[in-house]
Image 1: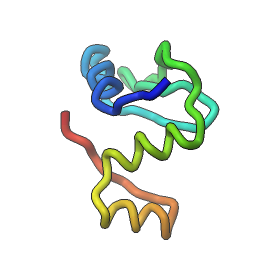
Image 2 (image 1 turned 60 degrees about the horizontal axis):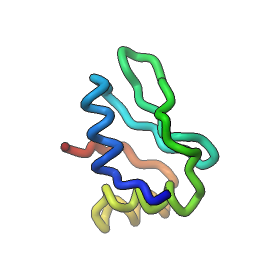
Image 3 (image 1 turned 90 degrees about the horizontal axis):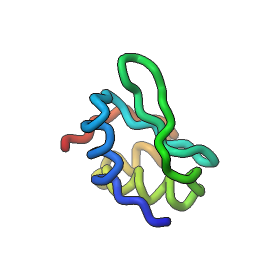
Image 4 (image 1 turned 135 degrees about the horizontal axis):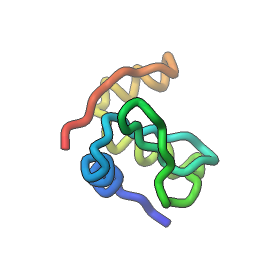
Length: 77
């Protein structure tokens, strides 16, 4: 299944969440009141995870992530 970051972020807002966590081999997780809760989505492949993450980043952020494997950013809905 192809996931759209907008759909996942909409679910974050609907659940009253503060963060979206994406990891290969796991479904997307949402942080609600400090607790991570899984979504009903299927586990993410490496390709899906990369596509979702890169769709939220500008070129500078992508380069930083690829060079350091670390990035702290926010995404407005």
